[in-house]
Amino acid sequence: MGVDIKLPIGLMFTILGIILTIHGFLTVANAELYKKSLGININLWVGLSMLVFGIFMLALSKKLKRPEAKK
Image 1 (cartoon, one colour):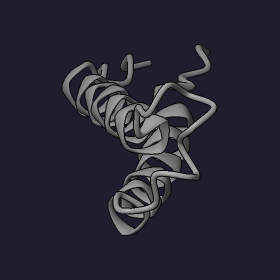
Image 2 (cartoon, rainbow, N blue to C red):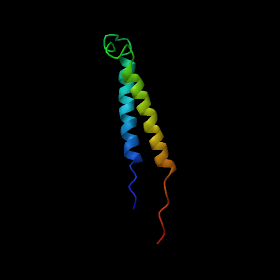
Image 3 (cartoon, rainbow, N blue to C red):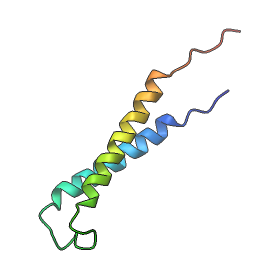
Image 4 (cartoon, rainbow, N blue to C red):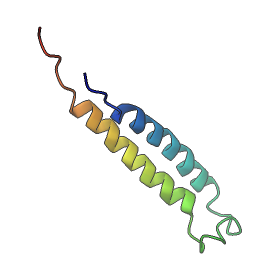
């Protein structure tokens, strides 16, 4: 009996990535918000990378489903 945590991790990263990406797009014009991060929209870039990683984990969880052993 193996525990497969790719699905919950993929869901968590995908949902958080969507939230951060939307927040990054909505605050792209606010230069004061990104002053501490040297003008980089860190919410957008981290959100996109989390989204890509989450989708990758979800794809792995769907692709590597093992068939149940027959008894």
